[in-house]
Amino acid sequence: MSDEEHHFESKADAGASKTYPQQAGTIRKNGYIVIKNRPCKVVEVSTSKTGKHGHAKCHFVGIDIFTAKKLEDIVPSSHNCDVPHVNRVDYQLIDISEDGFVSLLTDSGDTKDDLRLPTDESLLKQIKDGFAEGKDLVVSVMSAMGEEQICALKDIGPK
Image 1 (cartoon, rainbow, N blue to C red):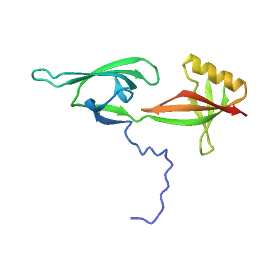
Image 2: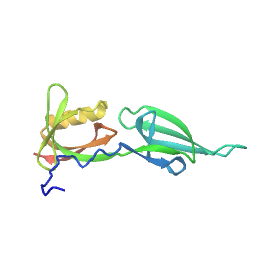
Image 3: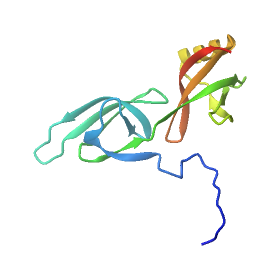
Image 4: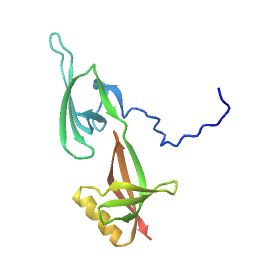
């Protein structure tokens, strides 16, 4: 063992998995689940009775948290499903570039410039209008499975 100090630049990710397993029978409405390799918010769960030789089955209906598409899956309730690690972080909006990217201020004082404006029309209009009026805006960024997207907006008053 060496006596040198090792310093690592990381985002506290440590190469961890983007999902974790959870038994299908324990996933509830408003939870999260991976359906067809997409992170989804569960909007409906129904469980069927066991057959003569089978398992009880869980029928999940989920809405993709980034594209808002409706996805469905049926899984035996005793089997494991993948559940995405979903994080929400608030950033202050600094600037909107011409090409549709936003410049955000992190808690550490750095800027984050790799996010696009959201595709949701009403949210997009709120952000553009609020920014044009010179309001101090805070955007919530949801991230899961290596994707990030602006999902909400807060107005914290005039600049």
